[in-house]
Amino acid sequence: MAQPVVFKNGVTLSLDSLRIILPAVVADASLYLTTALHGLTFDRDYLTLAALVAALCVLMIRLSPADPGQIHAAWAARAINVVSIFARWGMLIAALLAIGYVSKVSATYSRRVVLTWAIVTPVLLVLASLLLNQLTSRVLAYPANARRIVFAGVNDVSKLLADRLQQNPNLGMLVEGYFDDRSVDRLGANGGQPLLGRLPDLVPYLKEHLVDIIVIALPIRHIQRVVDLVDDLRDTTASIYYAPDIFVFDLIQARTLEIAGMPVIAMCETPFSGYRGLSKRVLDIACCVALLPVLIPVMLGIAALVWASSPGPVIFRQRRYGLDGRQIIVYKFRTMTVIEDGSQVTQVTRDDARVTPIGRVLRRYSLDELPQLINVLQGRMSLVGPRPHAVAHNEQYRKLVKGYMLRHKVFPGITGLAQINGCRGETAKIEQMEARVEYDLQYLRHWSLFLDVEILVTTAFQLLRGRQRAY
Image (cartoon, rainbow, N blue to C red):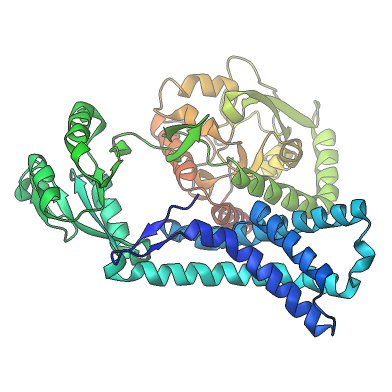
């Protein structure tokens, strides 16, 4: 829920209340105008409908506030807002139809009016939401309306937050400076923000200056100092926030959230929670459905060649680790004269005698991986993600490479960030596996749907140019 914004001139504007009321106003105004445009009188029946619509709008529709702190995902936030408005409007119309059916008053209203109104209103709601966010941003951008903020502690967290506040004046926060026990010489550059004093100087400063927000940015290891500082700040009306320095850890998808009403900090989490996981799954299925009609004849031809070239099964099934380290069966066209899936799996080397002639061609152009499209449709793999390794190799490298098992926070992929950066084939040296794992962890840290698309397109171009070849 959005918090009320208190301006320096004493005028209080509750954005949350406005976002609750505005949909009802827009919907009723739209109903009135639609009725007038159709040449009908806005009589008692339409007044009753307007009252019912206003009540349902208050209950079901709330315009989402802009989140200027997520500038890099602004397009996604707007898209989600639009989808949310249309979805909630659809539920409101369904509720109206149900009420009309039960009360048997549907025939009272013009179908043309209701249909036009039902189509036009969600568009007006989207426009109202955009205009409200623009207005809010402009009002908050005025320096006189800004809430003044100071930081207790200078570190990467406080510097980064201060920089973002400076870059986004529509957040309505003005950074005054820092308090830290270290000298300016030891602290170095503070992004242009002054050092206002030592930590013991913070409370006296608050008594002489109007400060709205205090952000305590002391390291987690100094938690007792945080407790003491909060105790010293009890005699102030400023809002107090704690921004722990969690950059001392190797973070994967770090964010704050609530579990059963309790605030927690995610320090190592999958990037595919909620709608993000759904969007990735939709991309996987859409690509598979588009590719399979073209690839099925190719796969049937490859299967015939594998069957005719050497004895053994056409499809090689091997145990590998999937999401959360659970074992899955991965499919490949058989390219070797041996089938290894035990405690010892020997990696393929250049000019390996175990590779069949047709297998050498398949591996050269990665055609042996095509059956893994079935793994993707089964929900065991994704088109893009860290490549799954044989169970035997997993057990070997998890003891040698730091963070190796973090790769399994996501579905394994047919291709990945490591592969388009040349990390393919044999890992004869531990450094080769470390480089592959580092790319995989970068993928987890920076995942986006656009990154998946970029990797898929790059993989296709590299295959066409012969840069993705393996032996």
